[in-house]
Image (tube, rainbow, N blue to C red; front, side):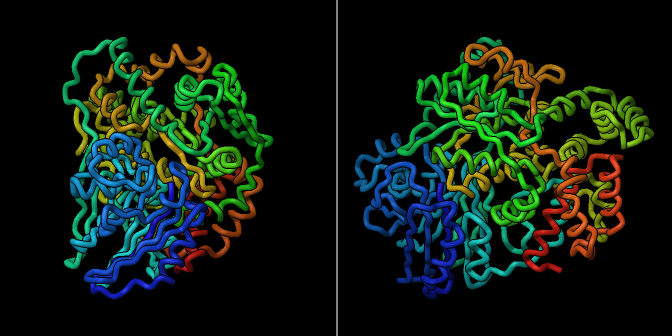
Length: 621
């Protein structure tokens, strides 16, 4: 894990070193161990690169970046890890290596295979490669988009970085893009490649973006996740036999590091499976980490994590923290650079802080729900599609007559299913994935909202997907929620403390294998992750397999009626900048309904709160 940034001047003007230094300073948290600056102003275009290093493999200065190839004309900066770097180095035996790490394998790989080197990489990465002979710059991002890479360009220059704050430090203007505001309100993020800053974009996952004297070229995809149209008949035993070595290898290669490492352990199935496999690889040396919240037993996963850690014989560390949400919300905004609607960023930040005091690398369970069909909305999508259309329409009409403010969560979920079941699949799945659904956004935003455009990212992803309904919503989730919510959350909150997070359940070979399997091995009714549970039976205690899914959450409902109430009134009700773009009465209604206990709008209020604070930070009108 590291931070990278740079500038390409299309006209050949030298890139100021002081600008690169300013960009690097904004990324110190991502790379506290070293900084490297490299410039090439010998032709057109000219380039300047700056890299902040978090040393994980080969801790020597010789492995600092940017790192060159044989004659230095190729320079590479890497953020992330290339897990198959040893095999790549072996295949490049005719090249001279100066370091023992993974970055140099990209440089020599490019010398050997050109841009096709990216297709040989197995890992989590974003990298920048400068080819001085061709005067050509490449920006690349890994298969799932685990590592971030942003860019902005005009006729004069291309500016790129791991985080938006580095772009702003280079003089990129901070301008609100109001057309993307409805998507943020609905989802809590702006779908790739867009952002809430005008002109600032994300490099798409599994893509290479090139720039040269002719300008910026369209992104070239090099991979996509494919599901089988007609999966072959496979028994559960055979599927477990196929999965087990892939799971073992996914964990094993993520245990390679020259610094201390551990596992973020919640006691849920996903992180527990990762910890169990890691324990078999490391023996008694495994360290596991959990946090609990002071005074909130419901959100305290420490008892579950302790049971798993004891079963595995791990060296377990747990901490009790007081979230202090009002003080931390500005910190979270600083690290995300954009408003971020997922409040679980807060406990993730605190867990990363506690973990970093002991280790530099931490494995996690991210990807288990997305690869193995763990979310209820996946099963709801399959069930709704199986219901005849006339009956779905009747359910929707009946559900609409039921009040939204219901006292029991199960009834609220049943109403939501019924009301949305009659909608087409993309619109329905979008509705089950939002904080504010289409009618809610239309009632909240002053300007007209195009419903078709709002649902566009989900519709496009589902239409690109293949196979069954379940396969298509799994694909859509990988290209929406996973890409723009879960992965940025883990990256920003761990890198805020210089902690490298690795996700074995998002191993490419593992996910590709699971994508070939029949739906019946992934879910039955509303039970998901059947295959993963079966594979875990020999690894984990029975109570862990039976435990119901519990998200890594915070008590927003209580906070917004208590300690966060003054902040909400000051930020959302007393002259907010949102007032010019959102209907003030709609915001006041949300706050009032929540404070009176008529509804739980905690996630919605968090989404609005972070947006308003972000607008104030950048002085957007």
